[in-house]
Length: 181
Image (cartoon, rainbow, N blue to C red; front, side):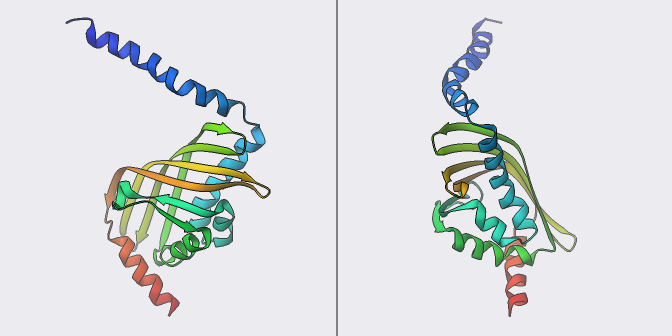
């Protein structure tokens, strides 16, 4: 057994730290109240959606938001107004019996002036009757600080685990449409 693989393992963390250390250093200089406000904005999207508190969700977004769910659905990222995002979500999430979007392991990975990049892990459970669709993965958020506080401008989701019936999304949308009629 040669020393090559071991050297690679030892060198990899060093190379990784050289890559990310400048971003971490910038993020570490962020004021604690800004860090908490960013985490609150991320939480407001997830918890607000589960509780159907649409003004809470809307308040977390900047006027324009780029959503990238291509790791799950394919296609391309889309840029919408915050009102359009809330309208879309409020037209299908209430079709589920319950949802629970847990977001954790928040990290501010870059911060410079009035912009920041954050990451978090998530698990989202959606239920219709006894049927479940559970999705897990990571989010990367772009944020900007405005007079109203930190607002999310970008959300990129990277799905890593999925169980259950993804078709529940369509069923929930149909169900929500019937409720609105």
